[in-house]
Length: 175
Ligand code: HEM
Image: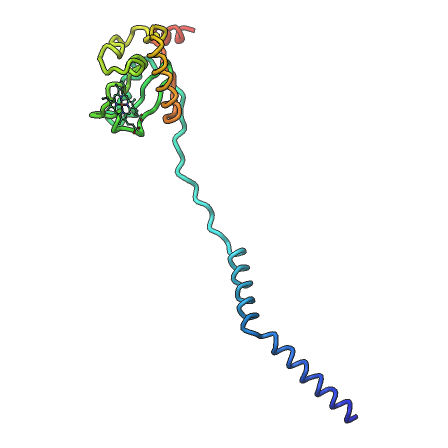
């Protein structure tokens, strides 16, 4: 009986020893780490905020007359036409807006002016009811230049519509 009691005391002492040996500084740090990582993983993240929505691009058909007012004045966008495509260049008002170095192209068909690298008034078909400038009339060098501009504009600005002559527009209306 005495032996049994002695063994029980010995076993209890051993058990106490092993359970206290688990509480080491390293284990405490590891436990802390596990709890922290678990918390970070499971804590509810705030719902993502959606970026401000871009206004939808409405593809429009312009004539030289309807394109004209889009020159950046009175809060209007800045649009210009190149070979039948209308680009929205509003994000660079310092180039194309009022007082900018290329404001002459704002609201106009810029095809001839860009191809020839000229700001002359005659480059922008004065008569807004006349046929659009025909790029077939350009020489090889001018065509090359125009292609370069088209590539650059396509990469930088959204196309928001097409530009057709007044006569083409009137014919469409009759259909
Ligand atoms: C003395 C002659 C010229 C100088 C010093 C000049 C200078 C410049 C400069 C510094 C830029 C800005 C480049 C950038 O940071 O992206 C630029 C862009 C431009 N230039 Fe000129 N330029 C000249 C002539 C012309 C001519 C003759 C035309 C056409 C008729 C022209 C049309 C443009 C256009 C369309 C842009 C692009 C603006 C954009 O990013 O949308 N430039 N020019």
